[in-house]
Length: 574
Image 1: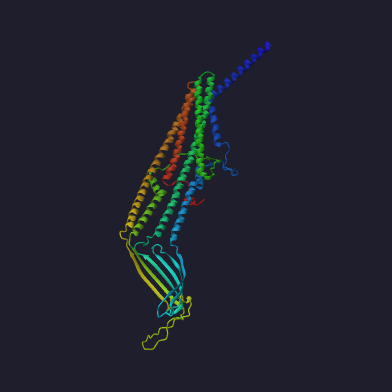
Image 2: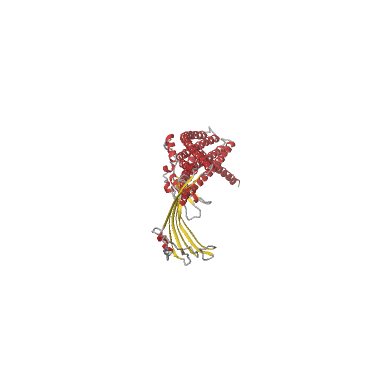
C-alpha cells in the first residue's frame, strides 16, 4: 500500500509538472506570435461586421409586419430614394399645387355673373280726377330682369348686358293699352380714366398670385436642395460611424490581446500585478468606447433610414443600410467668382427674394394709382318695345291736328299684340333707341389714407430690396466659408494620414519592445490609443471633406444637377 501510494504521488507530480510545462509553452507561443494573432482576430471581426449577422440582401422582407433586412446602397441611389420617400420633400411638394389653385381662384374674379330679378305688384290708389272714371286706380304689374355683368379684364371697369320685360293691367282712363307689355335690351360699360385704370384689385391679385406660385415652386426646390444635402451628409455620417465602429472593435481586440499577454507575464513573474490592472482598465475603457461607437452607428442608421425611406422607419423596423460608396478625395473647382456667379443664378432663395421685390413693386404702383381722383366714363345703349291690347276704359280725346275744325279719327294703337311682339320693335321702325354718355368725378379731401398707403408700400419695397441685398451678401459669405471648409478638410486628410502612419509605426515599435521586455502594456496601450485617435481623425477629415462638397454644391445651387435630380420629375405628387 505504501509503494502504491508513493507511485500515485509520483504520477500526480509528473502530470502536474507536464501540465505546467504545456501551459508555459502555450503562453510563450502566444506571446511570441501576439501581433499575428491580433491581426487575424481583427480581420475576422472586420469581415464579420461588414457582412453582418443576417446575410446580405438587397430586398426588404415584405411578409413581416415590420420592415426588416439589409439594403446595400450607393450615395446616388440613397438620394434618389430620399427624393421619392422623404416626408419633408412630400410636404413641400404640395405648395406649388396649392399656389396654382390660388392663381386660378384669382382669375375667377373676371367670371361673368348671371343675374335675375322677378316680381309681381298689386297697387290700388284712390284718385280724384275728372279723367278717371273710377275713384280707385287699380294696377297689376309683373316684371322681370335678367342678364350678365362682370369686370373688364386688363383695363378695369365694369360691363353689363340686361333684358327687362314687364306687363301692366290698369283701369286708368288715360292708359291706352291694358294689358300692356314692354321690354328693353340695354348694355352699359363703366371705364375708369384715372383711379382704377388697369390697377384694380382683381388685376393686382392675379399678378400677385402668379408671383406666389413661382415662389412656391422655388420654395419646393429649396426644400429639395436642403433634403438632398441632408441625405448626402447623413450618408457620410453613417459611413464615418461605421468606420469608427470598426476602429473601436479593433482597438478592443488589441487591448484584450495585450491583457492576455500581461497576464502571462505576470504568471511567469516578469511584471507586477499593477500592470495587469492597467491592462484590464485599458480593456474596460475600450469597451466603453465600443458601446459609444455602436450607439452612434445605430443612431446614424435611423437618421439615414428616416431621410431615405421615410415612413418605412417604424418603432420595430430592423432595416439596415449598408453604404457601398467610400469617401474619396476628388478634384473640385473652388474659384470664388465662378461659384458666386453660379449661386446668384441658381439659388432658390434669391429667386424667392427677387419675386418678393416684384410683389412689393406692384403693390406700391397700385397704391399710387389709388391716390388719384376718381374719374369714370359711363356709356349706355338700349332698345325698347311696346305691345298690348286696347283698354276698354280708355278716354278718347278729340284731336284736330290739321286745325281745320274737323275732328281727326282716333290714332291707330297697333293693338292685339302679345309680349313676344315687343322684341320685334328693338331694331324696327317702331322701336325706341336710347343712349347716353356721362362721367363721374370725385376727389377725397386730404386723401390721407391713400397717401399714407403709398408711403407704407414704398418703405416695404425698400425693405424687400435690402433683404435681397443682405441675402446676396449671406450667400457670398456662405460660399466663402464652404470653400475654406473644403480646402481645410482636404489638407486635414493629408495631415491625418501622416499622423496615422506615424502612430501605426510607433505602435508596431512599442509591441516589439514589449516582446523583449523593454516596455510595459500601459505604454503599448498608450500607443494604441494614439493610433485609434489618428484613425478617427482621418475618418472625421474624410467625412468633413464630403460634407463640405455637399454644402458647397448646395451653396452654389448645383447640387440637384450634379446628383442627376430633375426638378420636373420630382414635383409630381406621390
